[in-house]
Image 1 (spheres, rainbow, N blue to C red):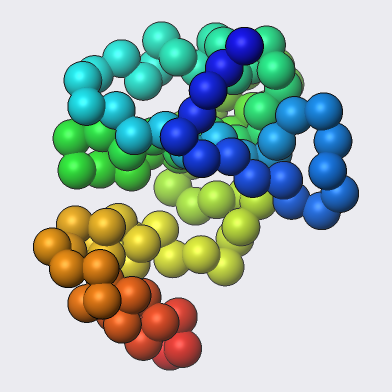
Image 2 (cartoon, rainbow, N blue to C red; image 1 turned 30 degrees about the horizontal axis):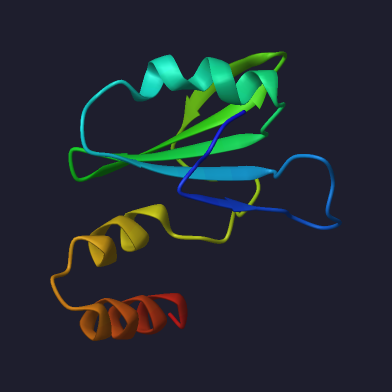
Length: 101
C-alpha cells in the first residue's frame, strides 16, 4: 500500500485517488514514483527542498510536468510561494488574491 500525506479524487470516487501529494523531509521522491504507478495514481506532487515537483502518469510512466493536468487552473508557482510563507493567514490571503487575478 501507499500512504501519501494527502490524496484527492477528481470526479467520482474510485478504488484509488487521482492525485497524491507527499511532503519529503529527505530526498528520494523519484524512487517513490514506482509505488504510485502500481496503484495507477494519475498525478503525484512532491514537496521537497522547498520546491514542488509534479509528475503525470502517461503511457505507464511518470513524466515531470510544470502545470497540473488534473487541475490546470491552479497556479503552481503561486501555490509554492504561498507554502513558503511563515504565517498561514498571509499564505491564504496571498493565494486568494492571486487566484482572483
